[in-house]
Image 1 (cartoon, rainbow, N blue to C red):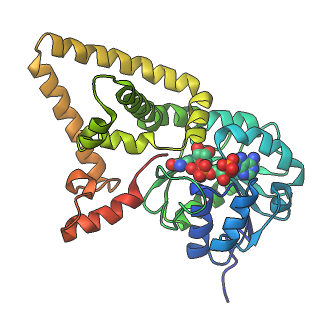
Image 2: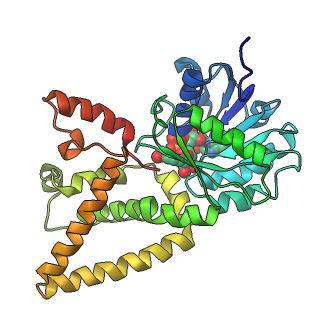
Length: 324
Ligand code: NAP
């Protein structure tokens, strides 16, 4: 006798990197679930049909969520409130409503008042991504060995939270639970501020008059190239992240600026010991990230092709880059 699936019918709204990766991962790892997909852009829905995303393609979100026992919003954070308001009346009693947004406080605040009492709200954030967007950019293994953070409201039904936890584990993710506010603070320093720094440094280089554009590209083998990958991330997604996690980002930026001033002072006054001590501590942090399996140990992120080790590392790195 075959076991009944965790969810009979799953609706995915928004078919970019994360939505299309979810469609592929569910097909690969939870084949018993029927997946209905949709996107507000007709060309994306058409493309989803061409590349076989989901079992059914719905014309709109309200049609997609009907009868679904799990609905996951995979749209930019700024689109969550209006999409939530539009689908709320069509949600099936007993269904779970979730999302994948990179900011959680604003998502919970927007969705909680809209969700009918019979529907369980369990927001989530898979801390996994790349700098690419759109339905072709997704892949089934994106969530494997990555963290997925659940931020259920305090009154959430424990059974619904346990089902969402089982869902993400089934897709290969490790699951952690925390408050939305704590999530936003942690992600502000691990993801949002680093993206802002990358956008800033690439923008500064682009504006420099005494260094030509061709030199920036030619000599980008230094640290700059790593920043350009992050700074190539989706402008809509990241605009929404900064507008919706304003307080935590500003708090972390304040600390960052203080530490940057301290570094400036060390350089000005020739404090080599201070610089050495900081660089030694930061090196240890990278070693810990590698030891925890969240990054490759290959030199240059495994980019140098030609050696079997580098080729293998390169394949793994592509899947592990973390833009969440
Ligand atoms: P994406 O590749 O840009 O895809 C988002 C898709 O949703 C686009 O096709 C977009 O269409 C569509 N969409 C926007 N508003 C919609 C609406 N109201 N109804 C239906 N479809 C709508 O973005 P993504 O990278 O998958 O990100 C999706 C969410 O995941 C974001 O909240 C982001 O914060 C989160 N996240 C991203 C990453 C990452 O690294 N990319 C990692 C973890 C979590 P149009 O473009 O035509 O408007």
